[in-house]
Length: 331
Image (cartoon, rainbow, N blue to C red):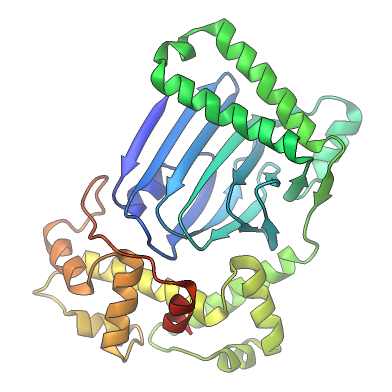
């Protein structure tokens, strides 16, 4: 059983298990992130708390299914999952999860051979896509409650993981609960997600090939050869954000990386901001502090001392602005 506490998002993102992915913070409310995980035979369970909104994009591992649940609404592969839904991703499939505020979540990894055994089940698994499992609420609650109660028990009674009988009993209960998610429920997989994902990737690649420019939605649509409405829909479905808002977040993360990798003797905040197309330094500094909890000059000053992201470290407190205010910053 592993319990970790972080004050830096990057260290938290590096520690998250069960997928090959990129995580980006998109808002900051509470500069704190926590992670708990444990191995239970062939199963692996994990839960986390994020003190802000984030975007996670990547692919599941190749030898099993990943189940994801959070209490607050989350955009999951182009659909909005509620507290009664569980997002299930087959082996090696791409996913995109985005939430705009602080949130708790949990994941469960189950080898395909443990989950599906009959010919009919294996046939389903071989062609399955990432999907929302809309089981009856009591079925979802049983699944999520098992994970949370087990991790809590393992934290306060570490000897639990050393008891083969207790571990095997939990494993059997969790497998049964996972299978129940598929039984008698509605499976909802977005038919358009792959198209939306290809569209957003194409737009991001096009925009980031000119990092010193800040194109409008009409510019992006024209350069990509698609209607503005198509572009807006793709980003809204995948990330819950407009194209300009998403690209602004990417550029702010790029600014943070450059500031951390530089020293005050080599460059200035102004040079980095201008180089990334941020011409209004006041708005840049405000948006940067709102997202990362510190001024750009503070990042640059700390980067000269410790250019490599640290596993532990302080982050200035920040208050999450109302969503309307955030949208004004990123419009």
